[in-house]
Structure formats: structure tokens, C-alpha cells
Length: 343
Ligand code: NAD
Image (cartoon, rainbow, N blue to C red; front, side, top):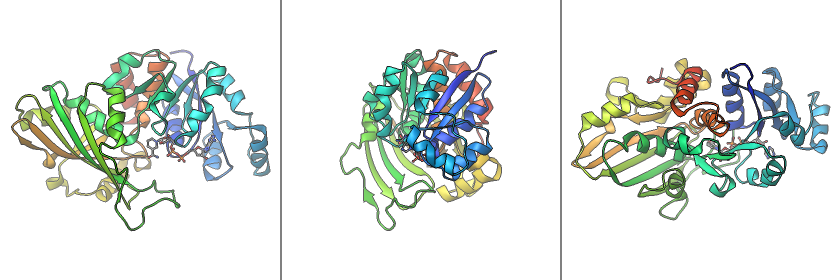
């Protein structure tokens, strides 16, 4: 493509900075600029990577000037410079920018911390890219929901799914978050069953009969899910393994041969060869796959900081109708280096 679409990024934290770096690797899009709230180490990183910095407002630009960081303008200026905005502000903040985005008539990709009603549709590339094509606003669902959708969509064509049940063991905070917890507890969070994750899966796959229950544990590395899928017909283990081995964005890890049996070892192995140690793929523990007639159970792990990054790249292409589903997924996976191997 001769002309790259210009993507503005509002919020340059855990998710925003990874999306910016992923956009830099694409041939059909570029980063027009990023919004930083405060001049912190992420702001200096952004300068070093050559991103143009914009402040939310004139008032907030002052702090950047004092820190010696050049500010190119405000959020309004960035929107005017862009074809689409990625909103990667903290959950609930994206909604507050909706009136401005709408007034300036810009396409927007929101993140999973926002309510589903913030956008025209919720998005997962493998599950509903085609229905999302041309929608002016999309919401890439959360990391947990993305993990659940990857395995459900991989397996949905094998046999009709009667019911999905998942127990989500969620990380308490991301690695840099020093004020979140728990430090010494397992919290039943949220305490309601189904947890909001089941509703979130249905924003993409309305036909799925799913229940989820979630707890939060004192770790920053990854989420782990125990998933049970009951199909209408009996299924065979080799069929399941064959599908998961062939499906994009899923890595199978065999604990017996690799001795990887924890999120700590997954992250350690990922650091051997992956940029930032990120795992954009969903990890399924192959030896946990257990079948009884029509019922399948397994454990899967989600690297919360990076699983949604390829989805954001595809959401840009879907919203702006830049590419068809498989073309986009293939290009995203090629440029970001997604593979079927952990290291
Ligand atoms: P974060 O706190 O790491 O980053 C948010 C960034 O936005 C920070 O740089 C912050 O300074 C900035 N910011 C704060 N208020 C702002 C404002 N009013 N205007 C502009 N910028 C502002 O958050 P995150 O983890 O990157 O999450 C962003 C979104 O992605 C949320 O909706 C979250 O639910 C979703 N998400 C997060 C994860 C994860 O594990 N971190 C995974 C999937 C989805």
C-alpha cells in the first residue's frame, strides 16, 4: 500500500505502548502521535522511539515542556492528524472521550476496560472480523475474554457447543502497578457468578451458553483459566489437538517434555527469544487436555499485557476496511512474529 493510515494513540501505558510498537511494524499504518498524561519514563521511551507526543490539553503540556519534552499539540490536534484513534486509556476513561471523538467524526478502537456500549461492536479477530468490517467504533475485548474467545472459536466448528464453563484465576496487577493487590489473599472477584467475563464473551459470540467464575491471586505474570466445554456430540482427543495445533494465535505447551508447568516458567521461556518476553498467543497446556465422551477440559494461560495487541492491529484494518479477515490476521502474525512455538 502506498499511503499508510495514520493511527493516533490516546494512553501510552501497558497496552498503548505495545500497540504503538506493533503499528511501527506494519506496512499499511503508522503512528501519527501519542497522548501522554504525565512526563514519566514511558514519555522518554516514546521520545526515544521517535513518536510525536501530544498532551491531553494545553494545561497538561506545561509539565512536558518543563521536563524538556517537545509537545506537538493537544488531543484535538492529534485527532485531526489521524485517520483512527486507539483509545488505550484506563478502563472507564475512554467513555469520557467518546463525545469528543464523535464530534470530530473519527474512527475509534476502544479497549476491554470500557463498557460494551461504548462502541458499535466488540471485537475479536478470529471470531467476528467480518461482522466488524466498516464499523466506525470497535472495542477490543479484555485479555481474559480474548483468551476464552480464542479457544472457543478454534473449537466451535468441530461439533456444536452445548455449554462452556470457565474458572478464571486472574493476576492481581501488571508488573509496574505498585498500588494494586491483593498481596496476601485470594479474592473472589467479582463475587457474582457468572462473572462479567461470560457476558463479555457474548458481546462477540451471542449464541454461546457460557458461565464464568473468577478469583484474583497475588501474581503479576499471567492469568490461568480452567475451561470445560461440553459439545453436542462425543469428541476425540486427537481431533482437538489437531485443531489447536493448526489454529492461529494458539501455542500448545507440553509440560512433560518442556517441564513448563507454571506461568513463571512460561514467562521465563518467553524471555529466551521474544521481544519484551511478550506472549501474544494463547497458551494451552497440552497434557491438561482431558476428554470424557462429549466433555473437554483443559488449562490455558493468558499474558494479559500482550494478548490483545494483534487484535488491535486487526481491529484497525476491520474498522477502516483495509483488508479481509485472513489477509489481516496473516499479516499481523507475520509482522509481530506470532508462531506456534514459545521460544
Ligand atoms: P495503563 O494504566 O497501563 O495505561 C493507561 C495510560 O493512559 C497511562 O499512560 C496513563 O497515564 C494514561 N491516562 C490516564 N488517564 C488518562 C486520560 N484521562 N487521558 C489520556 N491518558 C490517560 O492501562 P492499561 O493496562 O494499558 O489499560 C488500558 C486499557 O486496556 C483498559 O481499558 C484496560 O482494561 C485494557 N486492557 C488492559 C490489559 C492489561 O492487562 N493491562 C489487558 C487487556 C486490556
